[in-house]
Image 1 (cartoon, rainbow, N blue to C red):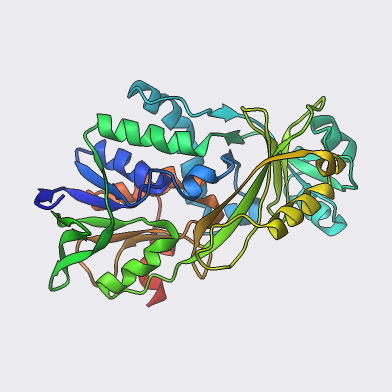
Image 2 (tube, rainbow, N blue to C red):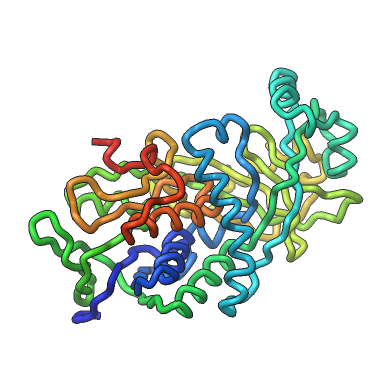
Length: 363
């Protein structure tokens, strides 16, 4: 790859890197995306692909505008990617339920969304899986779902149609002239560029050493079970207030998850996680104890110290940008994050305020 050049080099072939390549190419930039393993080989290919509106608390916080913009962008991309000949990725509008078995939580949810609140019988009419004790739940009509790996590949396809390039390689550092980016170092050469985006998920932390900037990202391991479970009369997908969920996907399997484990860069599925997922789901759905476990997967999500994305220019360095730290919401937040960062890179004003996500906030 030595001797090549690119307007922008994107390091990382997850959903965020793919979405950024698409957005930049649509703005007349010719990006080069470099991935060391395979496109969507990490969390972007193993997530459940469930898209839901932000909770009331989250919507009122700094993530609210990014969350709303991203969810709206997901709906726009369905048609856009199709126009570019991208393969389908199972986008489907599908209501979801947020349920609770705690009386105090139920009262809080009822007050926050009285028009969408359902008593226990109303929840079970929507989701016959649920036979455990519950206090009720909130119906979220604006939810949707996708197949994550297919979505990432669709973005890559459309980005390439627009003029982006994708290469396999291992980035080892950046070439700098003082504090200005002049290129990207690879195991097999260099690529000349004056703009680079570090979007390598939890592995982005190591890139801080290349540029002398602290990128405090740690891996948050998540595991998911794919179960074979007989269909119920009504199967609206649901999650609880702890972030556990259950949803039947297009292939007929029921996705149940997830865990939040701080175990470093270990991506191995474990028996302990399987037992925990089944136990948590079993509080609401007794049938999971009899379900066949078809598959178990594990992946690593990038988590920042304050739980917010790290999105924007690398402090004290010209031409370097950081895009990571979206935690469990990376798939949902990628479209809005990519659009905002693409605007910033091309000298435009992003449609949302990126100040809360500024990489400089960590010093």
